[in-house]
Length: 348
Image: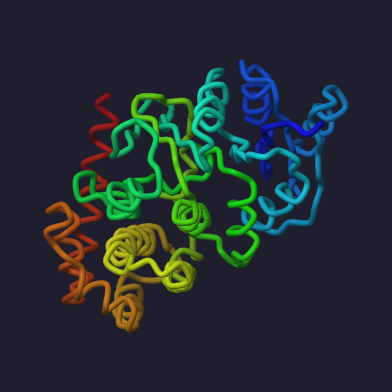
């Protein structure tokens, strides 16, 4: 007999954290599940730990595969899933014991397609709650169209997506997830969660959303993407936006203004990463390249058509600087803000 829930854990070099992750699932009060560990060619001891769990528990299966990145790894796990519903958990995170009991109860009670809980961002010194932007409850298609979709990718109140892009704080009906993720190219690296989450939301007939249930613990370490240089961000962002455009057009959803707001936030983030952390080029070289980069037609549309009343003053100013290509001043703002935050951390 197949389990109701398949929990898929993509694993790549998380030897330090994977036991806490898997144990948090084993300790769930909800028990009708299987765990699929997908080792994406880890080079540390992660693969060995996966094998140990699979040998000990008959409801745990391990897959070892060639390195293919996050989307490819999630697909590999989904192909092996037998549950009617699917949950992804990142192998360096963990979940609270009641997460699946609560979410599966709502899914089965309302015959919903997706259930969503809230996230705690855990750093070395703090736990930061990420609230959803909507009231808790069951949303049928009519309520989704009226209340959720207009602010799904970007909420003016929060200056961020109304529905967090992460796949990991959601349980999704397998048939809906398969229809979306199997069509997503493996080349997606930056924004791979959102490009799956939002089409699933559009395809769902109904969703249950929590408000004060913080079941998913996202671990943010000093090596997080916001604190080190990643040369792929700028290269992948135009591709990500084009995939968003395509997926929304396929579903006849007019999300252009939301995509533009979402793209503007990602553009600011990616340019900050380039200006502050690329040590292989001089500031002059980076400024020259970035001026050419934001001259791409799709980025010009984003910068010229974005509705400034929908975004905060801080982000509005950064987007204005990009619009007039004043990259040096943008660099100074990033640089001094970073110094101020560093001083605040030292005082703590």
